Image (cartoon, rainbow, N blue to C red; front, side):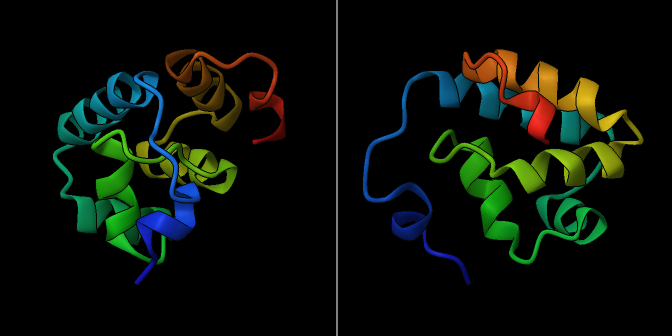
Length: 96
């Protein structure tokens, strides 16, 4: 299982992470998926990663953007762009 301390380097997450996490949680719930089901469909190795993202504890790694988009049947670039807007970032979504 992954470690939160490893994932975020032992640093407190910015406040934007909580808002973004709620948006991702609401999206998952809209699709009627549990965290474990989303992790399996998206190919995310540990459902705890989804828990941490939704709790606002970590920002998703870029590979997770594509995994979420695939699980939700969305365009990965559009999903990444929207996700980044929730995290207050600009310009990094193109790499997703």
